[in-house]
Structure formats: C-alpha cells, structure tokens
Length: 239
Image 1: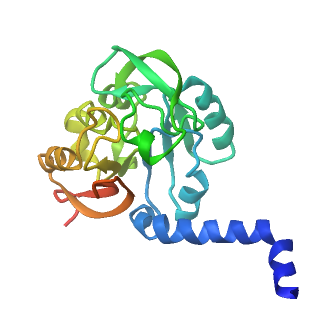
Image 2 (image 1 turned 135 degrees about the vertical axis):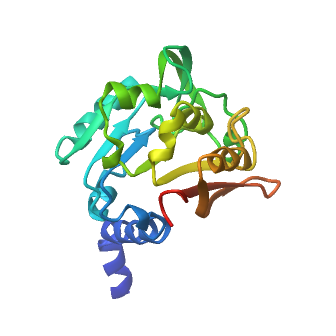
C-alpha cells in the first residue's frame, strides 16, 4: 500500500519520467546525427516542441518555419529564450507566390496540411479540419536566398509538413545537395489524399546522392502498410 501511495503521490513526476524515457528511446538515439550540429532548418515547426530536445543535443542554431499564423505567434514566444533560434511564418511548397488552401487541424494544428485527410482520420479517431485559410506559398530555395541563410551553417533539413514533403524538397532545387542529412515523415499509404509515397520520396532524394540511413515505424494502417520517420544522409558529403 505504501508503494501505491508513493506512486500516486508522485504520479505527475512518474508520467514525466516515462515520457522522457520514451522520447529518448524513440528520438534520442534516432537523432544522434544532430549531436553538436551546426544547425537545423525545421519546416512544419508548429510550436517548436523540439526546442529543448535540440538544445540538449547541442544544436548550435535552428531556423523554424511554420505556416499557421496563429501557431507562429506561439512559436515565437516559445523560442525567445533559446539562443540562435529564429522563426519565419511561411507556407513552404514547390511553387513561389501561389495561393494555397491550408487546412487547420483540430489537434492544435499538428496535422494541418495543404492536402485533404484520408487514412489519418481512421488512424486517429476524432481528427478533422476545423477551418481552412488561404496562404501564399514560398519555395525553400527562395527563402534561403531572401533570408541569406548560409547552408554551411545548416547541415540538416527536418520536415514535418503532413504530406507536402516532396513539394518542399522539389522547391529547394539544387540547394538540396548542400544538406548532409534530411529527416522526414513518409508513408506507404495515403495518410493524406495523394500524399507522396515513401518510395517516391526515396527515389527523388537518390537523384541528389541521398541514401536511407535509418527509419522507425510511427503508424500502421489496417492493411499493415506503414508510416515512418526516415533519416537520409548525403553520400556525396558523408563517406
């Protein structure tokens, strides 16, 4: 009984510790490539939930890019105490200055996308879009030039763009070859309507010398098809 009282009394602390352990097991080892990294460009930043994770890994600078104007305000507030962290409010795609419908999800915008929901609604009951807004797109190549980002200081590109991964990659143009690592979510099925497949993304990145380093399964649909976090490395820069 004393043990039970102890655990209930310290329930919040226990849950917090469990979450830390899970995050370490899933992301800590997976993200070893970021240890003491010069810098990251993280597209689909949401509120910057990974900010403390990146700090603990010793990442020296982070560029956060978020499409949702309201979530962007929270992102700015969340990173203001983090040295060499900057945020931009852009919807990143393959096209420049194209009007795009951006669908805002009811899970604090975590699943917001330019694509319609498909199997995501089955995998995550209750998930839906609560509204849509129209935004002008920017491609990553233009952002890098306009913001004068020196890619020698940003080794890694991280995408959390809910089905728009291939569009973002294509919008980077030849500059994609300057990254050493690219981490993104990819699926074997349509999490979002007409989202690019894991295979199509891998084939595109292969054209620039990127090879898969590792992946972890993050979801499985009713057919046994999987969604992954995938890490690619640039074989032309890393031997």
